[in-house]
Image 1: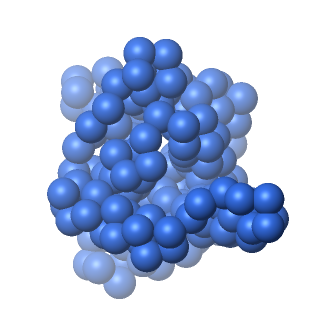
Image 2: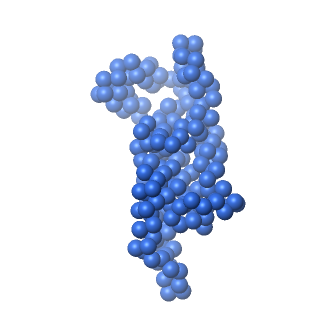
Image 3: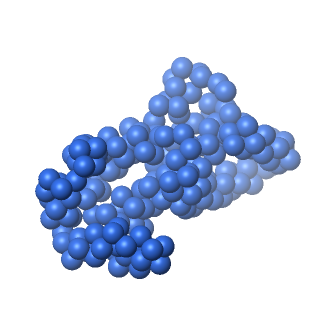
Length: 198
């Protein structure tokens, strides 16, 4: 996936043949801004392999684009989280029922009227398996790991994971923002400060 995405990004870069000259600086600026907005929107969608696209863009355009990729990735993750915060939880219950996941649908129906803290308390009341309880207690670390796990597009990708995190109501927006800032930083920061290249 990364190889194909990198090849595609190189082809796009070569096809655009973006050379900044005094007569086309404005067009190049608009192309970069439009590409950034498209990147943010694409990464916020569930099941899109966000990390792979970001690495492919870093490989194609080099360290100079790393700050923009970093900011766009954080923005897209927080956009997905915010969308999740405003989605009605009843929609998740209906989706789970449609997929014949009756136990999950029943759990969502039980937690739907509760506040975020009450939901967390109910999930931690001792009936959960130890791994689930541990994941809930250290949910921000679990979120950072889930967003960074290679191949996470199989479980919803960064956008899907963040949307469900927002929908769950057990993640604070500020703490989530700080978690995402740290979670997506290693590769871009390595490129910016260490000159790492793919």
